Length: 306
Image (cartoon, rainbow, N blue to C red):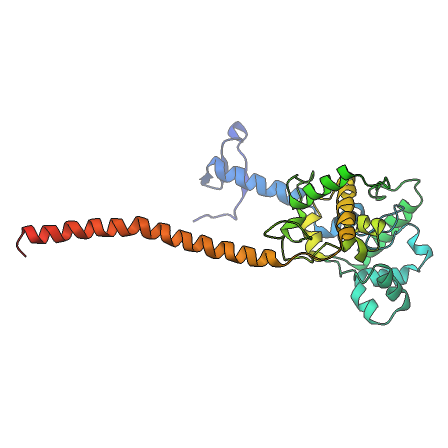
């Protein structure tokens, strides 16, 4: 047994090879693992110490800009000139509760955001809310904030833009940042015999529902629904991709109507036919094999006179 409390010390002559723990000797792998643990503990940054700019970029920039105009939520440039800090802090801590309280300004924000409710942000504290408001005040004084967002094109749409948008929607051309194609979750009219995804709504007339190009482009630059936020927070659309998709959606809305739901029936019939073909193929393979085995057994018994 050890007589003294455990002590950790390094032998100078071979400190890179051995670590001695009293009269126990630990091989190099244990030393390396311990060193890595100590380094990780020393340099780990707790969530509470996250910089306000980084926190804003990860949690707020998908719906807000500072001086870049409205996205899903309002532009936050000079936000403290609209409401006092106490109200803003309370709202940042729990937006749904402030909205449910019947607050008039919160109701106005909801209306301007077309019914999109700002969710309660994980990790938000009063200290962090004040740090974010300090950041917004500083960014509002700059000629151009780092959170100004994408500058979207207002050029007229061309047939090339429409074709590009269709290719992006269908996934025939990959998105630059690696995001999922629209057809994975959505569909539009004439998208194909099998139709598109069913997780999200039909987008045949989304150009009309969002009241035109500007609002649609803002939505595509910063999707506000939880599902789309999770899918695109690390894979944002590029400005030219937003332009092309907006062109495609405008053209789809002009054609009118919704997706032809016969694609679902076609998918079901195709699956049923494929299952039948697979069963026939398996029968043709295994039936012959069963008979060949049985034939050998029967002939063997006959030869033995059984």
